[in-house]
Image (cartoon, rainbow, N blue to C red; front, side, top):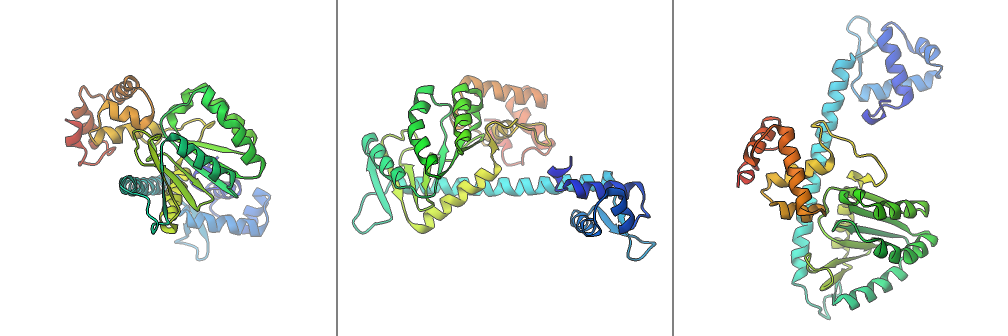
Length: 337
């Protein structure tokens, strides 16, 4: 029940027994829980790591359970700090990806620049992608921003997906949370999962990208028109950085079939991202594009957040969000624009 806080079932059982009777030693706890002495000692070590037990002030060598009120509050605070640190890391990764995209837009093919291959036009892009996916050996990782795709497009991708997964290739795809409202996308993810593929979602994604075997990355040169041109990157340092970006975002994403949970503010991941984007001063249209939804939906999301905060304007919403600790002071001026 407390596995989300870092406690497995055995550790929780030991903790509950210690809360009931502070005089129990290892033998008594083992008898009460049906565990071995070694398992009890391992559980006590874990409880010590979580700061849920402490040495007794009265009896040397004895451990005392910390009250749930103090212990759980400390664990939740620690998780909140870890989440904030992860979000900061994601933002730094997003900025690095944006700089990389800007650099790639100016790249031109050169005989001496073997780390970059420039592709011009949709036909050339698709042809090169077909070659690269044909030669893939271990893994394909994909960022797929832009919202839900049509059932026709998803069906068209199934033969290649089936062929790759049939060869034992690991396929991981990150989509926007918006696709959760698209039944064709959900059906496709279910189909992919049956064959061994993996799909997760995030509120927003930094760029469209395909990474093959952690050796090559394909990215558009124009984020507004991915069919205009693309670059194939095979420089070790660049591709390693992009793989790290994918791994970070993947670990923070939710499986498409999972129910979205709310954080300590009562916000889903998508709502939290909208609040962050509003704090940066983005318009409804820009937010809609980032989230893969319509401008009308973005306006509705913003209105729902204002209602949640009890605000009548975006400026007031920003002030109230700061008062609650949901935003830093820096975005406030932007929300008033």
